[in-house]
Image (cartoon, rainbow, N blue to C red):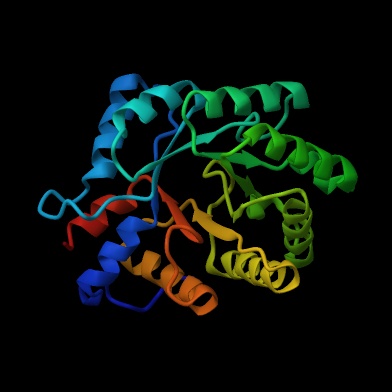
Length: 256
């Protein structure tokens, strides 16, 4: 589902807001420290004419946590790492928690993990809860984003159930996609996550965030997600809403 809004008509303040919601991501097989440092520099100063604009975070592999932390020292940009046997979660739990703990020890502020879809789809909900809770504990002070990979879940009820298990287990953010699945975020799936986050806040008083990730490439598409998030959060900021993207920033900065 795409917005009918023309990218040429997106106000500059909305473009700046969108840049501030980005988790600028590099999760390639050939990533290097040089690539990560360049990513960090771009996240910290995406618009050379305005030093007040910056991305929300960089998202990298755990072995680059220290590199990203050093590169972003003194900036407000956060370091996020995918961990917990991303993107499939098919490793022993001890290996997942060790990877998370290492990423946090090396400077990660946020950890993005994927649920074990095999456990969920086979009905092992208690085991899935236990895994997420253990990974949350391994995060220590770092925030935990739980990726549901909604494109692999059969229907809306399944997505809602996965959201609720994740929230019960301690998720700070619900996230749509790994970017490695059949497709990334959709507005319909993001709306479900936003509804579950709102219901959680109403029931517990605890604010949780939502991250739409994968496949959002144009300013017009991103604006549709921002408007949707604003309808739940008021004026959504990076503490409650993120967009995971690797190519979207090019389109946004071209309009500044």
